[in-house]
Length: 142
Image (cartoon, rainbow, N blue to C red; front, side, top):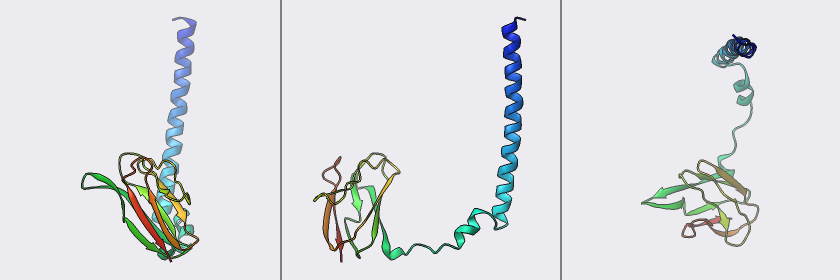
């Protein structure tokens, strides 16, 4: 066996031991974390003390495919001043949420992605998708 082959066997052997130890440590951590959560301890307990966001100040517009075409749903959304609207892209292609008057522009919203904007003034806001200009919708803020 050459010296290079011996070094390779040693390195791989050392790597194997390292991976075995790493796997055992990770198994222990995952097991301990799962048990802590099952017992009601850990991170989940800290979150339970936080108040749930007010559903009245958060709304969602879904970007979907309906009847074979892309659309915003709902196409008209009525909200109060101070509401944050989140656009969620539920399609397999990219889209944008772009104000017709330049108030906001999401940039590209990748498949599965989202974009949020807080409406701080009353008015009627029309918007579209820059990639698919036939996609249009309206948000009415009072």
